[in-house]
Image 1: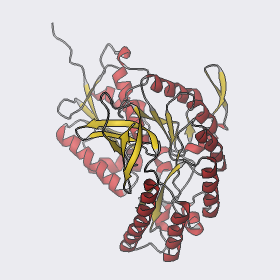
Image 2 (image 1 turned 45 degrees about the vertical axis):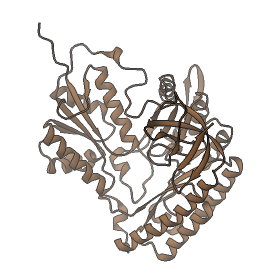
Image 3 (image 1 turned 90 degrees about the vertical axis):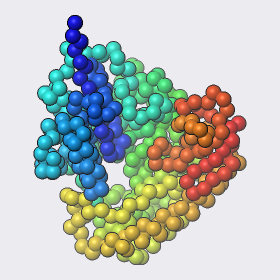
Image 4 (image 1 turned 45 degrees about the horizontal axis):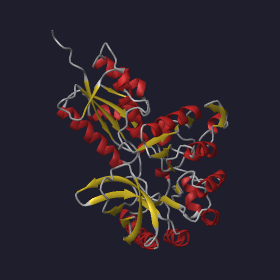
Amino acid sequence: MAVNKIPRVGLVSLGCPKALVDSEQIITQLRAEGYEISPSYDDADLVVVNTCGFIDSAVQESLDAIGEALAENGKVIVTGCLGAKKDGDMIREVHPKVLAVTGAHARDEVLNHVHQHLPKPHDPFVDLVPPAGVKLTPKHYAYLKISEGCNHRCTFCIIPSMRGDLVSRPIHDVLKEAENLAKSGVKELLIISQDTSAYGVDVKYKTGFHNGRPVKTRMTELCEELGKLGIWARLHYVYPYPHVDEVIPLMAEGKIVPYLDIPFQHANQRILKLMKRPANSANVLERIKAWRAICPDLTIRSTFIVGFPGETEAEFEELLAFLDEAQLDRVGCFTYSPVDGATANDLPDHVPEDIAEDRKRRFMEKQAAISAARLQAKIGREYTVLVDEIDEEGAVARTYADAPEIDGLVYFDPAPGVKPGDFVQVRITNADEHDLWAEQL
């Protein structure tokens, strides 16, 4: 008797962790409907490409990935931020043979296109999908997306035009997913959104219910609940609103990881105003001091833009002085990129590319010295680390101060039986400007 071939879908996921979560939701639903997920173009009956469209290099990477999928497979559905540009026409102009194009966070629309071009199996294997869903990260950590979209209109950014205004997930849905992930063996949750500290603003922080208890749809209350799971919970993409102060005591108490990812973007007040960023550098410095007074082990990561239109040498020097005083732990720096559709493109006095690149170099030299000194201060201290992988050279792990993919690593020789996902006690023995070396205790 002939056996029906199970349809197989390949997926290429590009861009930020928010896009990765969208890809996980698509894969989870495909598996629930009985599709298999193919790791290669050859074995796939159809390929979904989840794109990024934020900066020019990301646009080109996405267009290249679509072209590769078309060349290797031929049947391609495109989704993601790039799909929202010009209602998908930007993609169709370059790759007219794609089967369909959708915008970001469009799981149901993607699934409808998959059904149209690759009919789903008659008997969905719902029982094969774990309660936590299908994840594209290692088993011991996962991204937890709490909202979609953003209410800000930063002049260098086009995310709201692609992902819309802020829409917070119901607090029960977020906490239920977090519980399922913890039960499935996840040891670290990375809390993400476009604006994590705005969680609940769109629903006026309304009270929801979780396990029969009232819980406000708000970042502080969310953190309090996540702190009950007994695993690491790490906050990303936090705007420095006043109520961020409320989560610092929770970090000091060990309820959530003492780590804040806050994209300050600049220190000069005029440039911040041109960016339409809600911050004041003097106030930020005072708050950083207050946060560290409450939670001395707090790690702060941030990102900055140099070479923003109109930025003078004096304003850039002010940014360097801010770095000296703020003593941030982890920092990323980008030169201004004129993203298609960003209102900052219309500002006068664009900074020449060579000057912007030189400022980035000087910025990173300054921060490298700061990061190196802060890591040197950890030598001799003991930490709990989360093991990411074991290879022939030993164990690769992270302290609470290091988010996966973007921060530093801890290298050590593991005791027999240590495996990825284990928490291990180590003592730091050496450091450079980015990573640490340790001995297991």
